[in-house]
Image 1: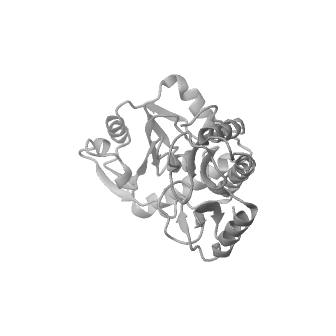
Image 2: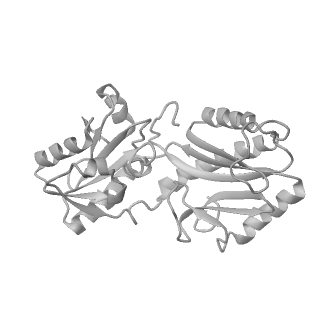
Image 3: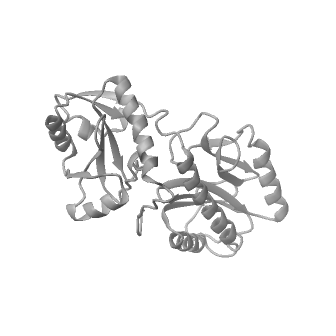
Length: 301
């Protein structure tokens, strides 16, 4: 659950970063002779819109419309009273109320004279919205290649990963003897204070995920997986608590398979990621303990 202030650090993410990302999308529109593309966004699938516009909803859904010419348009169900805040933290100038997404999109298309429209990863668009776009030709626009991490994205994820490692490794060292929820509470308190907008914490013991019972006492051997969002950028880290010799063996095992990727590989944003290389999370297990980290083309991020 996203909490607290969402702001835009323009030194870390200059407007030129988003100009370059939007330019890649517009090039794809020109190649396919499409006037615009729509990108669906909600709290569960906020990353594509965030990557292109820096828009991160607290709890809402929206459509981001990127024309081949002109600035992007945001159609959302949020109250107009938050539009000044949205403009302060995103690239949007044109924000339109859209309690009914399909109708608002059709109205925009009619206004612009668009008879056909690209839909980014069409299968993601809820049927409730898609089924109402009658009379509008939709063309699937795959996102492959349009969301590859650039220098700015990697820099922000590196900051997020450093934060997650520092606090997780410090807190897990003192977690033995307490309950899982006490450790989770300390982690959330510290990470939220450092600016985390969202996080998920998962315990395991003896190779079992999730932890067998709420409020269980953490013994000498357990693992913790932490997914963290910092300024809209997700990373995922896994660490274990165990005797020093076991921890050393676990970390050595992780480093030994890092060049080949012989473990669980996924994308930090949660999407399936079966291709070796670029940005990925690698997690390994050894005797029921887990160790994982966010990486980029081999080395740790």
